[in-house]
Image (tube, rainbow, N blue to C red):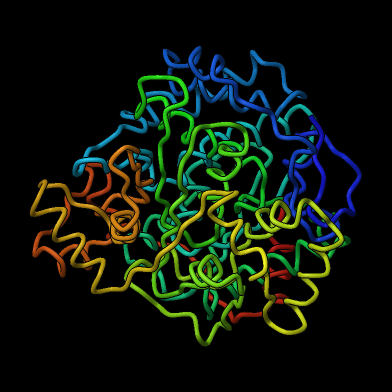
Length: 466
């Protein structure tokens, strides 16, 4: 299995090489040269597997430069009961609609599902090669803590995580900034997530700087994140169906497009997915694209701060991977579209709009603050279950796309404890906090605050890099 770039300028590379590279040298994103296919017989043979065993099988389709026994050992460490006491349960909410519970890990968010594997595989590959890696990432809330908890104390790797100063929930900030591990560095930037992400892309795109400082990535530009997320689509399908070929739809709260991209790829691999329901908040650039065919990211000044802050993103890093498929894997056309986007701030693919649903299964919708409050309240009144604001966006949009013959799974984004203020506003109830995190916001915090300036970030990184 070799990997190529969406922009066509990278020689084919094996998995372990792209794992450590992050962004491709030509500025594009890595994808397999060919996608493995899932037959009905293969899927049926996986029904009795544990999550760790399933992860080893699915990831093994994409990784042929790590021995299968080593891969299984890593997935067992990543997805064992000490990390996930319960893993990816199905939680029924109403007829035809359930949550796929992805927030049972150490940081109470779905990002743990992929990050725990990344923590294992980074340490394994770096030790095998005798190398070190400095992870440079950006977070709108959940990626940062999931990456830091997965990589804290790991040998040969340091994490430098940018976050938008003052724009995450207090719980999210405390999860990240309270970590005291020497290999964890939190940098709060005066700006929005998109500007943090721009700094990461700028420094990762400077090939000399990247090489000298051994830069890597854990954001969903890293293919390993996407591959690990494909696993829970397969797991969810296996648990929502009883017979081969039965269709399931998935609703996905979407900001950076990585989570739903994994569903898109699972569908292309042959997993029987009917609809991929993309849900956004008020920052509805992706919803607008799937509705109109026009991709028009907003500037930082027009990116709203909302009550589902992890989705306060206007420029989705992973959208380029879907774009590659949409233009029939024409890397030259991808390059031209990205140049047009840089020059004009948008591009128009409305001529391909019919393919969004007919060929790829996508439908979309947006949710507002009032919508998510009403949805949180309604679900709690009906079922006694509290859901977080991002999951509420997913439930809200999913309800407009229910099919009586097709189960709908909403990918749970986080546990409500991370967003207590909004839960209290919606229901008057304070969400329960796990016992080991009840003092989280009182713990000492360690963070560096700086201007939105790539040179300042670069200087800090060089000073503290491994």
